Image 1 (cartoon, rainbow, N blue to C red):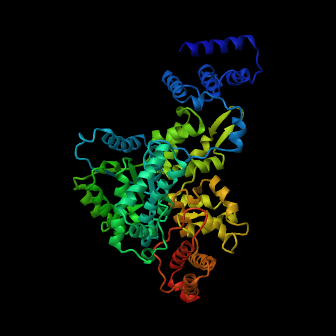
Image 2: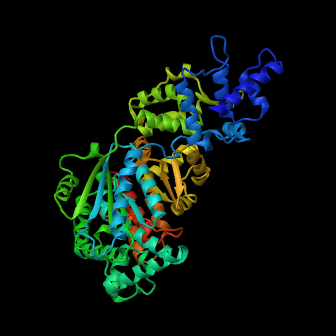
Image 3: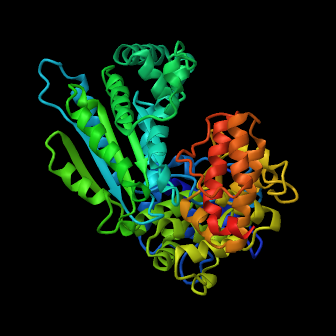
Length: 588
């Protein structure tokens, strides 16, 4: 309080000693002094230049508001007290993009981390004094775009820094037939994490990787390892002496029960090495019954019998508004709740609160909360607290300069008069589509090709498309950075993914049906022809050219890394021909 009083006295003293032009204000005078952070200049101006004749744009209504501003500055000095000398230039050339930073959901985040802390506490206790322990599972529900995936991303990123092995995979709309492949991909990612620890991790990571390798080698014979490596190819990078040329590895398909047994052995071997494991499966509403039974039935049952069950943490995410009464997930969840060996926690993400939305706007625009209350209220009302919709709406307001940076006042402002005339659509989907209408033709064509490939696509596949007429005139890769900048897609780990599957869904569904089928067929034919011409691929390509009437390949997972195998290309080709449909083939 004393420091603020001294600042006020200093400003008043300078006002009396230094005559100012008629249009000069307390704020401009403070800016000219170049002594105080911008936020302090605004705070003093809003306090001093007040009253009926005051020129302050955002006069304080009470002392409580002053205290609130000061508390925000104290708790977040990086936002309010450190002047960026290039802020004016940065704000105009690189405007804020909402949705890239994590905000809100502190209650749910705490609840998830409390489970992990509980499991860690059991692990660190004396093994002779440990009570009977069990695995834990959280099932997180909520409608599309409520922030489930983003929340778990943040949890996973944090726990990865705390020694957890965190692996995540998601089921895809329209690829329910590949549900078993998704489960196998989850374990393949786990094998990749362990393989990477051998060479790129800390000493503790390297030692853990070696212990995991030994545990797997001890629990599975060479034939079983060869079988497992067919569906978990990164196992070859973890265990170097697996010889896939042995006669045992030639069998084309694993039986369902053999696969279940091997995956259970894989997981149990990892749990015996005293490091907690978190497996995350997203979009369970698109999983078929066999995959649900494999994960929530067989795998959890096998873990129940392990003394180190407390090292396992499973999280399943699903859209409760897309689960019908006869969906196979519901009875499985009911049976798990009755189990005494797996502790179940059910969570639901409801609408984003006004306070959380206000925090997000305040942080992104570096403004005190009192200055964004009206903006937050309007956005919350127009979007019903749907965070994906709110983010898209705020970003559209930045693009059309409803939210703009004032060079004179050195901070962001909102054109309040425009707020109440905002035209918003009835659903998130139609709003997303309306934002896509501003894309240039090449970017839109690139986005349509990406949507035909599903939620995410390997960059190596897109590089192949550059050689074909599938791509727009300037190519797909040329448009990627623009699509990233506007928040439609993201690039990470060699994959291009949509920012949300709602965007992929509605881009895809708004492609004319005949054009969509044509795209699928051309992609299928192109990838089939790109694969090497051995007897297997010749037979598959012949099937493509003859209509693929009976072709069905259940695995559509692409290979990790920049090199795509022939099997991967043909699997992707088969998925696309299945999407084109037999009716389209017969019409050719």
